[in-house]
Image (cartoon, rainbow, N blue to C red; front, side):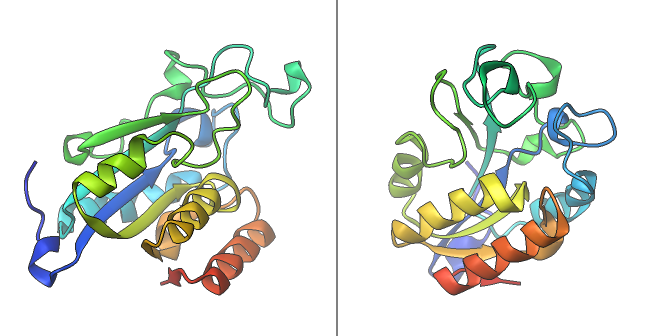
Length: 188
């Protein structure tokens, strides 16, 4: 893995790109986040600028009978079914810059809201001695929020660049950002 300059500051820094998947992007995504496509350029700008010791992308990777699907009594339409085009990370994201992909919501009953759902991300961050996360992606009021709160609970520092996140709705986005700020995230 290349050093993207984060170590120069003395703090190991990771960029986490949460669920920028085809099913979450308008106009054709099964669970499109309004304005979701607007996060792609700011994320790619962050990737191009470097300064990260690690870049992780997450993706919902659900079984066809996932408990969150409305067809199973859950709150969401069928989305991000593993191995389908909708579950793939958007090809508009610079995937060459991604060091690791973390799948979540892989079991029928796991919600998949947090990238810390399994131990994989925690172990990767510990192994790389990462202390600071910049968290971007979709949706602010669900998976971005849960991932950031779990990071804070683990003692990590968290930054949320508002240009690089979008929520399911404007009020939910604003409420999630306010909640994250109160919890200790740096909302920029």
